Image (cartoon, rainbow, N blue to C red):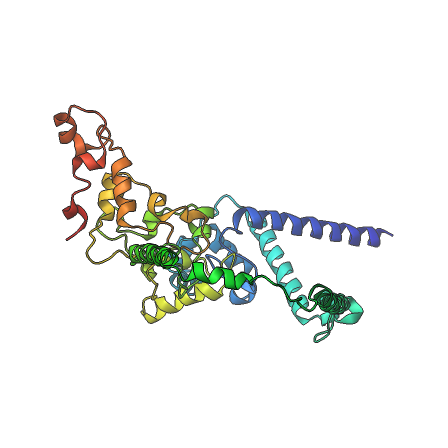
Length: 394
């Protein structure tokens, strides 16, 4: 009896110890490590084997990784190799954790590793239940009975409609009786052949042609709604919307020069050096970024917003000096899964913006001299040369 109580006590303590290790892992390790996949740091599955099953050395490393790497410990060479492999990312020194707490984390990692190994070797019936007709799933290549019923019903309705149309045609189309008066076509012929009617048709056709030609001519070079397929499925909704990454972080030239610039691969790698699995596309799209980085071949992004060569537009003048938000011209990019051209960017669209946009003369030192010279406190872009042809055309 005493032996049974002892075994139950040991089992209870082991369970509590594992739960404590899980809580400590979630609080201290989960932001940079996972059991079975690489995050910021390596996957912790098999960490005991990689460190020669020497938990004492692992505990020393966890307490202060930089001291262990630069010291003369048993696995300092291996620790330094890890440090170089993961781009010199410095691991937090967990000096506040006791040896026993780190030991409980390692036990939790070992328990999870063993559970994953059992799951990988388990038969299919143990992993996900029975598949196929016996498990409730439809067998491949079969058609749902509901579709058969729907197809037969539509066929019956079609046949009934054909019979009804044939019957009505027979009833409503008797042999035409001879009439004494002229037919409708005979009465309309003089009108259709008159000069007035022909002139009216000609005028209407000419007006339609001029209108259609004008609309078509004015749309030349305008690409509102243009949404090309990009080489990588990049989600602005995820990056700019969910994670609040500022436009200027990727488009570095927007406050410095004429072009906003398309981000280079090394800018992507600032984050994706550590984040290699996306929430929407998994590893598939991020792998293309890594391939570009390793090969040195730039990503061939397709340009969306492209003004005619005769137009001069300076991003820095509008964004940095004018304080115009990116969404004013490009729309709610933070809500777009795939970016498209939101505005038509026509000459009339730009001029109308210049006519209505108020210039802040008080908060911008760029306009301080103008503010002192002008009597009016509120002016538009038009009043300071915003409609001059040379402002936008070479």
